[in-house]
Image (cartoon, rainbow, N blue to C red; front, side, top):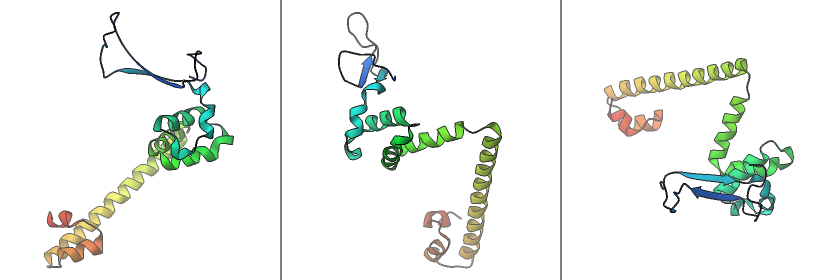
Amino acid sequence: MNYPLFKEDDKYYRDMMFRDENGTPLTDDEVIIFLELSKIESLLKKPIEKLTDIEKWMIFFRYATDKSKRDMLNKILEKEEGIGMAVQILERMSLSEEERAGYEAMLIYEMDQRSEERARKLEIAKNLKANNVPITVISESIGLSIEEIEAL
């Protein structure tokens, strides 16, 4: 949320559980998490190394489109791989249908190229193994693991 829900304090993160009228939890597996993004200004002063994972995500959610926070977001992206993946997904979602089709075609092409390269390496390794070249030499030369070569 980008507005204060719980106005009585400055807490920006709360997790709550479902409970019945007697206070018995419905389940330990389901939790509602409230992130009050309007309350996180103080996090901007905190060194990135001291931010918790949830604080990094909150900064990302709140400031992802704020160009003045780009340096801080880039530093967070270096530390938090999951946020980097989220950025890639957002970038793909913002593409037009035509751009997305081109992007997906490029990914398919790259996967095909890797697959063909791997098939070539396996074929070469198979031939070398048949000619009694030591497996360690094949592994070092081609870049396949010893286990992969032994399985041929």
